[in-house]
Image 1 (cartoon, chains in turn orange, cyan):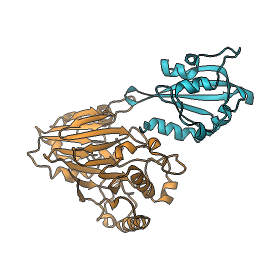
Image 2 (cartoon, rainbow over the protein chains, first blue to last red):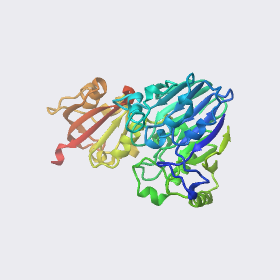
Image 3 (cartoon, rainbow over the protein chains, first blue to last red):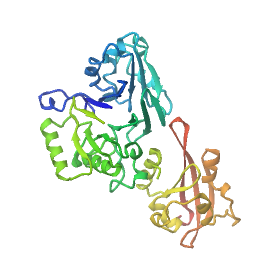
Length: 278
Length: 131
């Protein structure tokens, strides 16, 4: 499968000269299968540019939301294929303990927050409460589990029978753990990530920043690295960059993280437009 | 090795920060964790005791009622929380793994996650002797 990063920023879109290289768009990742099936992971502001590249001949799209924080759904109403009649769009995301996905998503995709109602979109998207289990979508097998982050939040493990991608853009597995990681059985997200070819993981903070944000649902870069090591992945993509981190700072953080190596995996810092083949 | 559900992981994390003694079991009643505050009541560190099947922990502490009559496993608040999926309360006496008898008030409640996934149960202990 081919994976393209369309938005790598966390929390808030961050346009500006200081973020132009890593990008300022929030979480969105395109996954294309061998038969060109299209999965979209999260609908942050990066999904707008992705929408412009979707061939008019594409008739079915699956959007997998990890959770409904604004930076993961803000681009949804700007995804051009939703306005095409005849495109079958399936949106998956977690329900809460009291409300289904449709009810939760409608709170954003309706006035006064957004002028177009979900039900008025020409594609009439199909909304699914994502099962907390394994399920099939086109040529992909997807495993979905809840992960440690405030509010109902899931991570995904996606395989096409060949490679495996694990996606956890918002994840705080170190929450409450004095010395992270504990053993694998007690580590949130472990089974989603174990032995993945590519792990796209929350790396929002430096360690000093993390100390100031414990419980906010995100990882320090050191935690992401420890988690990747525990899960024995082949490649770690640092993702969900803090909106306050400039290109220069992200370069420096990657270099500093690399200095702590060598690691038994390749360490990459996610940049908008970056592609991976697995 | 099966990774624990995230609600169980977070329950352990929370329990490890509480001074209230907490005991966590899976849907079959197998002991998954008790916190450091529970260790003096149960008479052994969790790191020593480790995970334990229900048939073991439900008898190893030799639970009896207030009159000293042995309590069958089904009468324990945790067992009620597991079987009936509702909170339960009882005052019991146990003999800790250090051989010391203790009188405890126990409140247990079931853990049910999204999609009505039944995850296990939690018991909170209060030592009557400590009053």
